[in-house]
Image (tube, rainbow, N blue to C red):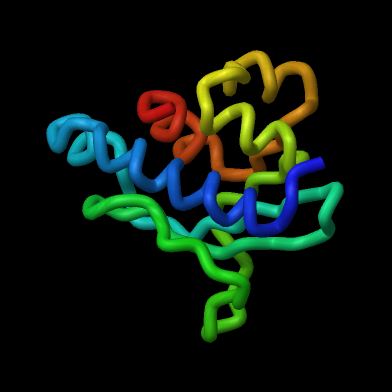
Length: 115
């Protein structure tokens, strides 16, 4: 099981990887959304945003407006680290139930283009 700090590092790295997505793809597929990432085996949730400028930063506190995240990701700590390191395929992880994404259908289609 990965630690909370290792998950923070993985989310930071995910944001850096998102920065590598070309600007044209971001313009076509990114809509600003709030995101939560719940690490089920650690029972901790990180909160961030996806926007044209990037992904994150992720923090420990929910948004001040109290609204639930528009995109909710639930994942195990080891799976998060493996996903970010390129050792786990997102599509297979979702279909096998290792990763759960709760979002609107439109958001799922847009995110699929970016992952």
